[in-house]
Amino acid sequence: MYQSVDYDVVVAGGSVAGLLCAREIAGKGHKVLVIEEDYEIGTPEHCGGLVSIMGIDDLGIIPMRATLDNKIRSARLISPSGKSVTLDARPQQVIVLDRREFDKQIAHQAQTNGAEIQVRTSLREITKDGVRTTDGNIKCKIIVDARGVSSLIHKDRTGTMQSAQYEVYADWIDKERVEVYLDQEKYPGFFAWIIPTRRDEAKVGVAGKGINPAVVLEDFLKQKGSYSTVRKIFAPIWIKGPIKEFVTKNVVIVGDAAGQAKPTTAGGIYSSGLGGILAGNAISKFLKSEKEKDLQEYQKEWLDRFGKEFERMLLARSLLERLDNKSINVLFESITPQVLDEISKEGSFDFHTTSVAKLLGVKGSVKAIQAILGNELRRLLS
Ligand SMILES: Cc1cc2nc3c(=O)[nH]c(=O)nc-3n(C[C@H](O)[C@H](O)[C@H](O)COP(=O)(O)OP(=O)(O)OC[C@H]3O[C@@H](n4cnc5c(N)ncnc54)[C@H](O)[C@@H]3O)c2cc1C
Image 1 (cartoon, rainbow, N blue to C red):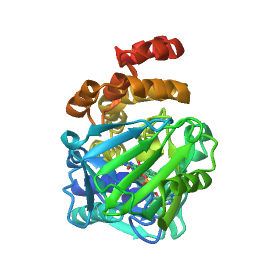
Image 2: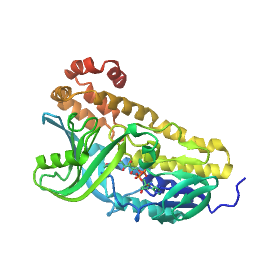
Image 3: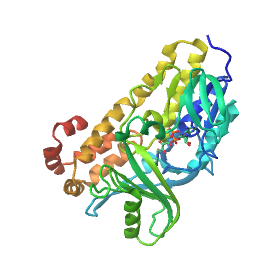
Image 4: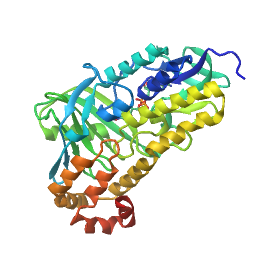
């Protein structure tokens, strides 16, 4: 069926989704090349690195000493008026990864399985028999688009927000506590965050609709106290959920490029990474059978796993976006220690809409919130 090819598969994008996809394909004995436009795998890092141990276990990765930055014991949510509630995060086993090292660890797994990786090579165009890259044309049977949010921006700008994240040194950082600041005026539709990486070190970021994230983040940092910035990154996040078609002919889209990051927090190490693995398995099957349905199976499997939860996350997002600061303050006043205890014990870091529903549905607040949100809240709570 195929003319002679250089590779069975070319993967464009050497980050978590692309590398895991390549690892699976190479592991089944197929010839795969990963092209990465940056100079180095894992760099520049544009991620908070927050993930559950269960999640990375599912991805088939045990973090090494160099990969694991920190362990998180609690999460503190802060309302616009400054009231805070704290969740015990220990049952959910949340860690902070060093993405530079983590991506290299996956690259090593992929290489050990037989994948080839080439940095400083960009995908320019998909051609009729493969791809055109900055390093010449390559013939292949399947092309995997793992280029992250950059692949989506041209298709749909309405689902993205700009974020800024600085790595800072400061003595006000709690080493074991993640902090999330809600304020619809300062960070409309999103939040500000502090993810501690070491003692007195953290990744501090903001995102929001229509804001200048650098200006807003610097204001936020000034209010926290004195600090030094050792690194700045600016990157778009995608909050609109999965795209319609993961597979079109011989092009397979994985990870953030397919909208596989959580619509609530834009976290995607787990769900995008698993997209890469499921795609890799489907592609391997297809390369043996040449049956198109084997390739299509990837989308079905990803949706079976995440579809319902992502729909609920989109619903939660649309509810939260409509709450103004006053309603959020009311909500915080109504959260009881019992609700926090239930969320800590039963909640899941990766499938968290039940926890969001619990917070929105707390007694006392529910009347005020229901007046604004009506039926949709009942759907989320049901
Ligand atoms: C500020 C910020 C904080 C985040 N924090 C968290 C967090 O705490 N926890 C979490 O789970 N997720 C977090 N995320 C999301 C997470 O980083 C992504 O979901 C995850 O990295 C997606 O992996 P990916 O492989 O799909 O895409 P990406 O990691 O975006 O990788 C895409 C790769 O493709 C390459 N590329 C792009 N164009 C081309 C081209 N033309 N040719 C070749 N290569 C190309 C890029 O250089 C890049 O290496 C955060 C994101 C941001 C922006």
